[in-house]
Structure formats: C-alpha cells, structure tokens
Length: 64
Image 1 (cartoon, one colour):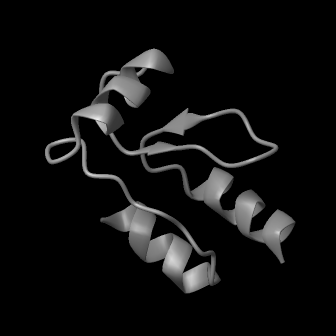
Image 2 (cartoon, rainbow, N blue to C red):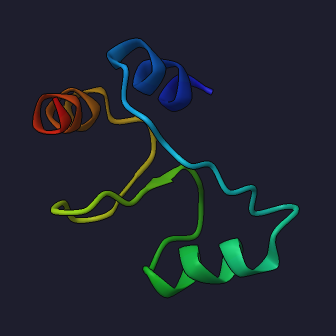
C-alpha cells in the first residue's frame, strides 16, 4: 500500500498486478528471483522488492 501511495504522491503512473488473482504475475515475480511483493519493475532500472522510498524518489525524478 505504501508503494502505491508514494508513487501516486509523486505522480508516477503505474500498473498493478495482483499475485493472488493472477498466476502469471506470481510466475513473473518468481522469474525475477523474488519471493515476496511488492516488486517494482521499471524500464531503465533493475527490479527491486519491498517498500523503497529512495528508489521511488529516483524513479519519479527520472520519469518527469
């Protein structure tokens, strides 16, 4: 929830996939080597896991 809230505060558009409702989303998370969510995948960045305010701030700067 905090990741989504922070992205919205920075005005970053995002697409959410629910791993409980979308088996392909869970497969994608596991294929990246992660076992938990949130996982943030953004073009030009390495995927990251968890609530990472520092990463979200940098992401917002790069997308503006």
